[in-house]
Image (cartoon, rainbow, N blue to C red; front, side, top):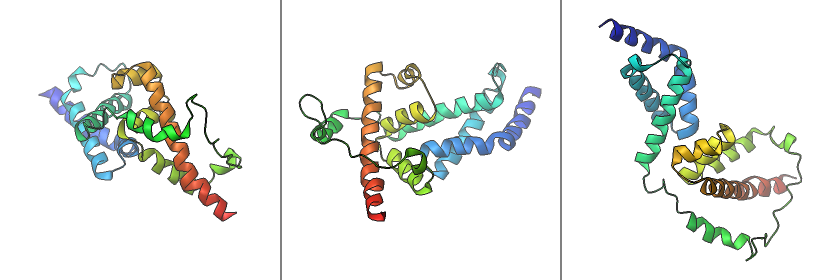
Length: 195
């Protein structure tokens, strides 16, 4: 009974100390405030239930974030099972018009004519980039976020998504192509109108 009381006390403390950070972490990944709140609640409940197994080898925040990461992956697996194995052939056929038979650009990507250091000062651009990433197929978006925003290694991504290394690189390459195309349409085309 003492362990349960300690766990209950700690769970309240965890919410006070780490609740906001966990919520932001979840919100960034699921893009829905209600789902993010649910994820934080599920994380704290899971931590409460497995409190006696917490060895203390990591910080509590790291432990809770790890639980939350698994909850987010479970959410995407359950919510969109048909999208977990993105049909990358659809992308290949739609992007095939960008490349010739030798896999060279048919039409070279347009020079953006802006210094990237200055471009990132625009809050509007960050909103467009976020929308472009959110517009990717679910698995592609998660793989891209893990690699480019969280700094995960290829082997970590492959392990988490149970995929091969070459498939991971293909997903990342295609994600970058789609994001570039999205930016050309939604930001740089508009930029020409502003000049």
